[in-house]
Each structure stands twice: as C-alpha cells, then as structure tokens.
Length: 119
Image: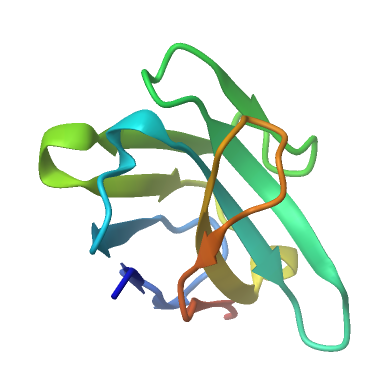
C-alpha cells in the first residue's frame, strides 16, 4: 500500500517558522517529482511548490517565493518544506503529492498536516 504521511504542522505566530516532512512508504520517490499543495478553509487547492526527482529543478508559487524552501532526501524517501516568515494567509492544510512529471497530475496524496499562523 502506498502511503504519503505528512508531519510537522502546528500553530505558530506570524513571522515564525515550521518544517513539514512527508515520508513515503510503499513506493520509492527517487524517480518521482513531488509537490506541496495547500488548501485554506473555504478555498480551493493551491499549489505551493514542486521539486524534480533529482532536486535539480524547483518551483514556487509567487505567494511563498523567498519564504519557503522545498527539498528532498531520496535515501530517506522523504520530502520537506521549510517555511519561514509565516503569515496568517499561510494557514491551510498542507498536502504532499507524487507525480510522474514535474507538472503532471499527482498520482498519490498524503492526508495533510494543518498549519495555523495566528497571534
């Protein structure tokens, strides 16, 4: 069974930082491109960041560029999202997803981890 399990979410004050992790089981992510997608309450999904299988290419939504950093450790089968200078508008459920192509529709999704930015 393929599973993507996110962790690292929580509540943080504006300006704070969090690091999200996504551990894969049942598949090797080393040949897969990966993404982080978020969904805020009452809104549709928003793609946050993508990374190629070899970490050679990364992409970010304008709303997070310069504040978030996507990375991966294929040996640990794990995807990361380092988030800094968090804003209230970053509050959302954050999902990781695997894709067979950097802009392809995801094949697998995690269950999400909640990030809440509030004073």
